[in-house]
Length: 177
Image 1 (cartoon, helix red, strand yellow):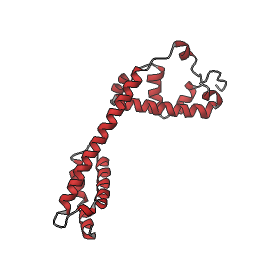
Image 2: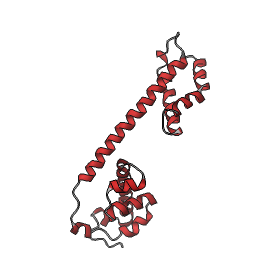
Image 3: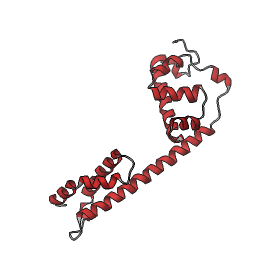
């Protein structure tokens, strides 16, 4: 691709961004897509025919990048929903197991970031459903499931850092509280 063609495409970045911003939900997403499109244009430069407008060719790349973005997002949403459904159908632990939970959690949970602390308290400790939590927070069940997973990972790391050996053995004989 000739240098002047690249310069032409770069000089029209504002128009390309405007085109993208009308098609996606955030300016950050439009920025990400335009960067991907510029990379694809450089990679696919040999496909630009000499009698073809570089701008029209680049708009095709932009449209395809937007389509790819929505396909990827739809696939992520489907995966999150499947995962949320799997978690909703897992059996609940029995009461004996529930009562054996490490006493350290009450103190350690305070070291988590607020959104993680809240979801652990609401779902794991108060036994609120993921759907109820998601509705209260204005997020999807899939997003709540991901947040819960990340919160549990953060709690586990904090437990291991604080309780060390007893955390690795499910806090059954916890002596660190």
